[in-house]
Image (cartoon, rainbow, N blue to C red):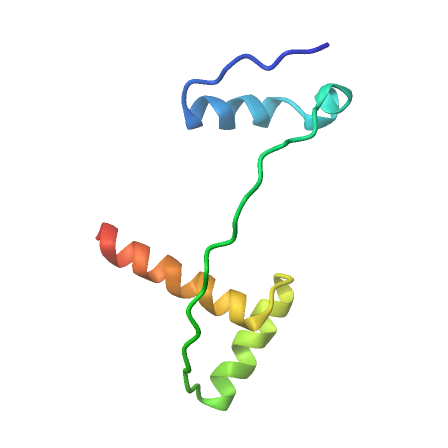
Length: 85
């Protein structure tokens, strides 16, 4: 069984996976027993210009997301950027 040494930083982890493949460890993987609860979402209503909404839907489809999920992603990313500065 191959062991992945404990990587102490995200940089070390990125460097490790740039040089290794998960395929090398595939037979040694164990099923994760963790469960993840999706956060409760609060519904709101937004009005979009039809052309902007069409573009959002096109971009979301390219990423394999619903347009609602894509809008949430864009808003969360923008809010985080504004908070960090």
